Length: 157
Image 1 (cartoon, helix red, strand yellow):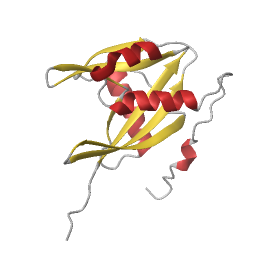
Image 2 (spheres, rainbow, N blue to C red):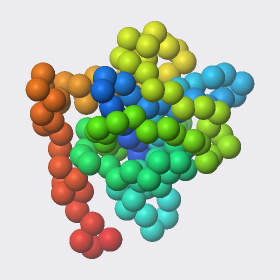
Image 3 (cartoon, helix red, strand yellow):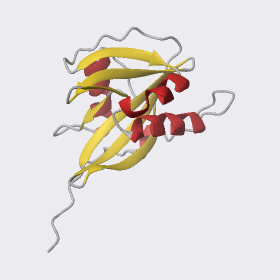
Image 4 (cartoon, rainbow, N blue to C red):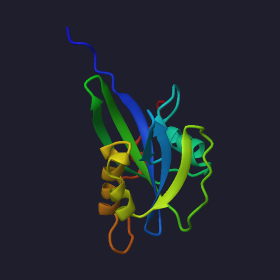
């Protein structure tokens, strides 16, 4: 009998404002890495609530996800896999972020070119992929075509 597949369930949020994206900086195994505000789903927590919690913990900002960018499967190692729900928030003005999580060493508002230049300093390929998908779903007039949160039904949670 094959062992049951149990990927980690995580959430992340693309936070965008006037051409820049809010990323968090953290030190992982002695290396500086950049990511969207992100983390693991906790027991008895909805996917959307997990995202809002991670945003507060990692940036100090009390924001609510506005839409779903995508759901991604990622295998970090042979025995380490993730299913990542990536949300988005569009802000009218940049807000000053102050990490509440000691694992986050700084926050940065970066444009796409700066993020691409980070290369291997991105926590995973999903950081850039999520941003690219977010941008693809937003037309030149800044009209978003993201997936509504109503897709994630919590009626029986």
